[in-house]
Image 1 (cartoon, helix red, strand yellow):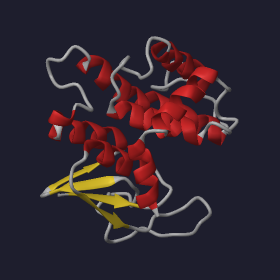
Image 2 (image 1 turned 120 degrees about the vertical axis):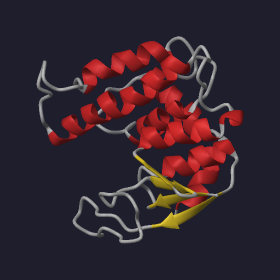
Image 3 (image 1 turned 90 degrees about the vertical axis):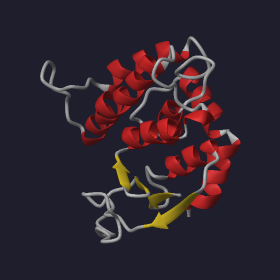
Image 4 (image 1 turned 180 degrees about the horizontal axis):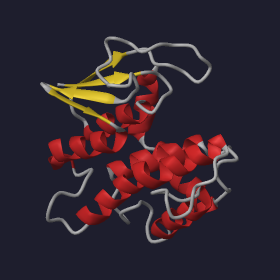
Length: 197
């Protein structure tokens, strides 16, 4: 049984979505987290070392950080087909998109949100305006990041883009909007929203 350490309307909601897509047994353990407005606190019941979400426990195995959780779950439940496995043609692209999410895209959005210029040549990421064309190019070849195949990478990207669709953090793009709606329009996402709160 997978336990998801979760706080409503946070990054952990997309893992309810992924677990629903996988169709495997799981339980949600709701925890408190520190919030931007100063409310909340580190919850001693949360095993994440910084009191954040998401984190999962699978028996004696603890996994935290979104891309690590996505990779762990799709490898653990490989028969569900939500992540290419070692030896499959799309495995390299899948790993790249997971790493690009946490190593480039999310830091780019945080930099823009904080109004911090990305230092050229020293940062491992780029500005949002430089990162998004890379994503758009990939999505122009198919409905999902891996072409016709929906994967856990789409769970990360699609939910992020849906959240930022009305935000000044991202330039408007019909292709990105259609992609985000395709991802969050899936029945598993609707089930996740019902279980979120």
